Image 1 (cartoon, rainbow, N blue to C red):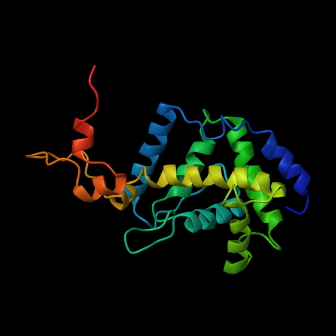
Image 2: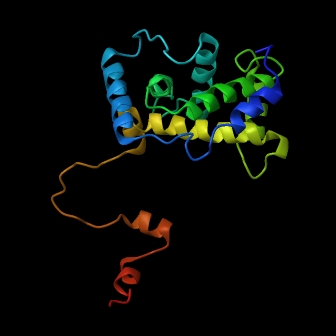
Length: 207
């Protein structure tokens, strides 16, 4: 990105309307989820050629999503769940706004410019240091506002893809669509965490 200045990148990000950056229609989201299902059925080692991301951007995206959702003892990482493929499909979709594409491309360029080298070529400690500057909006310096806006939307995009997958459902321990012979109510531990009880609910005034 040597031919791109920080000012250019900030200008790109500023040109992307906040409200429209991650707005997906129902049909578009359904197509992306169907695409994920097809990729899941092919297995983890199936080759994928990005339609939107450049090779350099693809490497950055694959690394960045795993900083947001790493592999742990309960589930695989964002790349294991094929979140980058989900993102690429949406960004290449004809219904995706130019604003969303501009913000994504500009944000990835900003990330490289914020590093001593490209994000991919930095050490783990250097990457984390840069991400710490933009991951917490209330703590971020004003001059980091463009990076903060990009990273927080990128994080939402990553989460949207991950929890649209079977791996994501299992990570949440989602139990919907399961027949229940007898409804026992909300688990006591959950009620305690929320600070409520059924007595409080029964005491609500009625019209």
